[in-house]
Length: 259
Image (cartoon, rainbow, N blue to C red; front, side, top):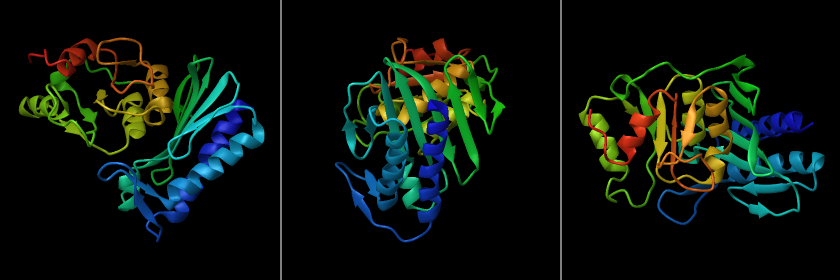
């Protein structure tokens, strides 16, 4: 029932994305620059929550737009109704619905769906990760210098010591391809699928990574914070790799990497 509800909620949210995409909808700005929220975000979140609450009215829900629906439950649904809202608002089809499910503080299920690419990623703890029902696994690269990386940039503290721009510049000056798609959930899924070898970002929220980090782990990869500690979506830093380049990437994000 949990798995079926997760899948249905993800598809329900994605139908809203398809309905509004490249159409006319209201756009507003949350705190900060280019921190957009659209009419589609709110509508997607509404239908996702309706689906979940219809099946599990007593479950805890955390969403990007509405915040927390606190309940005394072992289960917590973590929802991003549109990950990649800036892309969505500009008609760029690199965006998705992302939903993770925790039980007793451990992520057990995750789904990420980009309806424009028709890519449905799903992970279940202990059972692996799939793309459109086909098993996926991380890449086999063993060195950062031969890797293809992906990252995102926060809208604040870009110039902090050893911050996002400094790390990015070092990779680029070393000739390493680093992409920026604008959707952390998709970034993580593409690491899980072996398209990227590593992903790092300095400032994420729980809904950005809840489903995606489980995807990477279940595809055979490794996910930690910038100190190498087990990853928690409730802290801002994330490093997700195929596992083979993880130690080298940890040096890079701490400013200690020498190629």
